[in-house]
Amino acid sequence: MIKKNQNWINMLNMLSDGALIFFSYFAAAFVRFEVMGGIIDLEVLTSRQFLGVAAIYSAVIVLVYDVMRMYGSYRFRKETQEILYILAINGSGVVMLMALLYVVRVDFSRLAMGIFWLLSSVLVTLKRVAVRALLRYFRTRGYNQKHIVIIGSGRLAREYAEAIRQRPYTGVNIQGYISNHEDPELGARLCGFDDMGACLARIQPDELIAALDIQEIGEMPRALAAADKEGIHISCIPVFNDYIPPHPTIEVVGNSKLINMRSTPLDNIGWAVVKRAMDIVGSLVLIVLTSPLMLLTAIGVKLSSPGPVLFKQERIGKNKKPFMMLKFRSMRVTDTEMTGWSTNSDPRKTRFGSFIRKCSIDELPQFFNVLTGKMSLIGPRPEVPFHVEHFKEEIPLYLVRQQVRPGITGWAQVNGLRGDTSIEERVRYDIWYIENWSLWLDIKILFKTVFGGMINSEKVN
Image 1 (cartoon, rainbow, N blue to C red):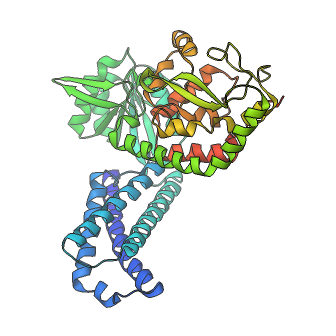
Image 2: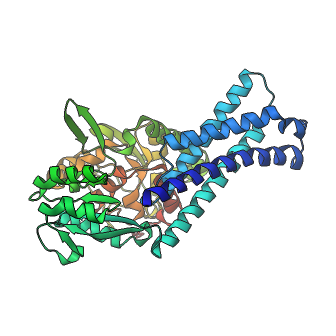
Image 3: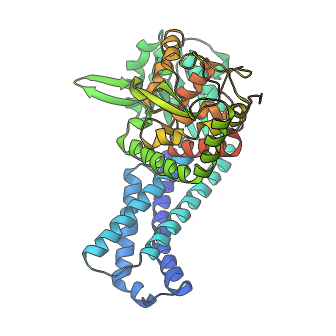
C-alpha cells in the first residue's frame, strides 16, 4: 500500500512542479513587461511559440529533478540539500535556455530570465516545504505509515529503533523484530531466524532493516533470500557502521566493493570549486570592507610595542603542507613564538593586543591567506608543526583535519571551542564538519561568526 501511495505522491509532485515552473514564466513576463515596463509586447511572449518553449523547458527541468532523485520519500531527506539542488538546477536551466535563445537569435530579456529563475525556485521550494510539513503532520498522527521489520537484536538494531522513535515525523512504524534472542527494548519479537520466511509471508512489511551484529551476520544470506522471495525491499546496517562516514563513496573492483572510509563531500570537484569560488569572492569583498580597520590596527600595533606589524607563523595546511599564516601581532616579540600556545592570561600579550584578540581583529590579515589559496573562510583552525606532531600521536583522527583547507573560523569555533579549550573536543567538531560539509553549513557558520562568534572569552589585560 505504501508503494502505491508513494507513486501517487510522486506523480502529483512532478505535475505540480511542472505547473509552477510554467506559471513562473507568465509571472516573470508580466512583472518585467507590464509592471516594470518594457519594449517587448506581452502578446509576443504569450504566443504559441513561446508557450511551447516554456512547456518543454518545464518538462525538462522536472525530468532533471527526477534524475537527481528529488521525487520520492521525504522521510529522511535533508531539506537544505533539496533547496540547494532546486536553486542549482533552475539556475543551470535558465542559463542554458538563454544560450539556446541567443543561438537561434530570439530576442529575450536577461532581467526577465532572472525573475523567472527566482520565481520558479521560490515557488517550487515553498511548495515542497509545505508538502513536507503536511506529510510530517499526518505521519505524526498515524497516517501514511511505512511498516518495517528489524532483523537482529543487537546494538545496531537497538540504535536504529531508538533513532526511529525519536523521529515520529518520519512515519516509520516498527512492527517488531526477528531474532533468536529476546530484547524488550525492540518491542515485539515476531519469530526466530529459522521461521523468517513464513513470518515475512504472513506480515508482508513494506521494508526490512537488516541490523545484524557480528555474532548474527551469518543470517544475512537467509534474510536476503526471504526478502527476495516475498518481494520486500531490504536495507542493511553494516557491522562496521560506526566507522563509515556520513557520505561514503563505493568503488567496485571485480567482485570487491571498496568503501572509502575517509571520503568527504568536498572530494566532489564541483562542490570544491563552489567552495573555492566563495573563498575568493568573500576574501576580496572582506579585504575591501575591512581595509580601513586593518590600517588603524596596523598603526595601533606599531605604537603598542616594538616589532613588526604582522606576525608570520608556520602552520600546517591542506595535505599536511606548511604555509605562513598572517596575523596582526598581539604579543611582545619572544623566543617562544613558534611553539608557544597562548593562554587566557598570557603575559606576552600587549594591552592593545589583548583588545584585538578579544574582538578577533588580529585574524583579519588571514583574508590574504584565503585569497592565495592557503586557507579557507571556513574550516578547521590550522596548528603549528610542533602541535601537529604532538597531537597526531595522542588524538585519534587528528590528521583527518588536513584533508581540507584550514579556515579563519570553523564549526568548533562558533560552538565556543577556541583559545585555551579542549583540543579533543575541537577535533571532534572539526571531523564532524568535514564529514557533513555543505554550502548551507558554511553559510550558517559565517552568520554565527558575524553575529556572536567574533567576541571571544579572552580577558583584556
